[in-house]
Length: 115
Image 1 (tube, rainbow, N blue to C red):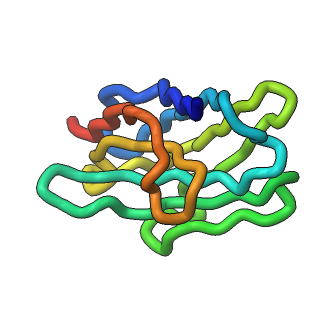
Image 2: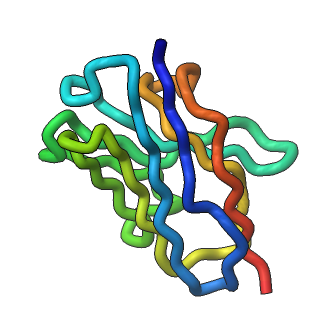
Image 3: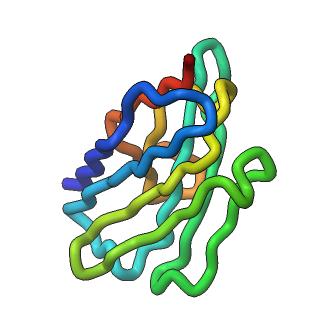
């Protein structure tokens, strides 16, 4: 079955950086566009970024463009999100997802940006 396991979250000060990882299994990762979503307390699930199968195309929400960078390693079935210049409003649970609606996603990893 499909498994998506996120890791790398934590507590970071404003302006800091974190790199999230997602390990995928149970489907053909190489032929699947992948996404990152996030959900802040009391808010709806928000799409963050998307990457094509061979990394030739990447897309970002306006709120994270030029601060966050999505990458993937098809040999390792892994997806990554490098997050720089973090702000308090980036605090959320971050999920990797194999569909564009975020319905098929992992358990998430908490990112807290606070001084």
